[in-house]
Length: 317
Image (cartoon, rainbow, N blue to C red; front, top):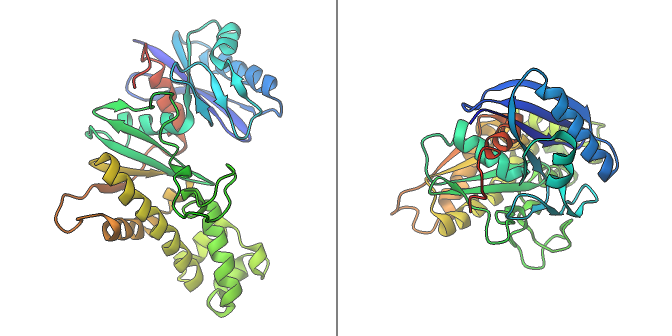
């Protein structure tokens, strides 16, 4: 079909990239993410124009955090941008003169991994992104499953603990409150407060107090064998694996792809997630068990996936 542009809307920058049909990024252009909704639309257009220079482009795919309608045109609600029923497709098309589709950013990343990354060769995969929060995407029968209204796979807001921790969505006990970057930092601070003698490496990397612990400190300390840091990853993995076991009961995929910033830790995170998943999987000793594998495309997954989805003429499912 030709070259398309994928757009990834980040908290600090908006990246646009020209992507070919094999998933290769040919050129990119980045602009700062502005502070107002309308200025963000203008910035998206500027990023697209910067990336498309010298290329014949047939369409644009935009990955946006939040709820996107099934027609891939309107952002119902975005948590970090003041978009409510935002006709993003219409506005960007008017600025760039190209066909535009809008996709949830986690769906776009899942599709990118399925098509060009860790999911190649699988028909049925579930992707989860472990970052500041927890997101995901569903590919069943080689198709991205969006649900009837287009807002499926909001895995981070599955209720794991009734009346549990308050979530930013307004509910309580959501999965991302127990399996995310925020959760990891909370675990480390709690454990360092309780047993500072087991957190000497971790505390030395920060301000010397539990309140100064950051995610990057936990990663370094865990690799040096700090007991609190290692145990914090195990607690994160316990909840992540338990959630995957629930998803296996729902979707029965051949593989789970784990992406997001925490997946960069490799086996430090993946090995205990696998163990927890197998522990909680119903009938796990007597049934085939899906692989739990690391994502391969890193920060490019959403951009590549959004660009590829721009080649799909109609919403998939």
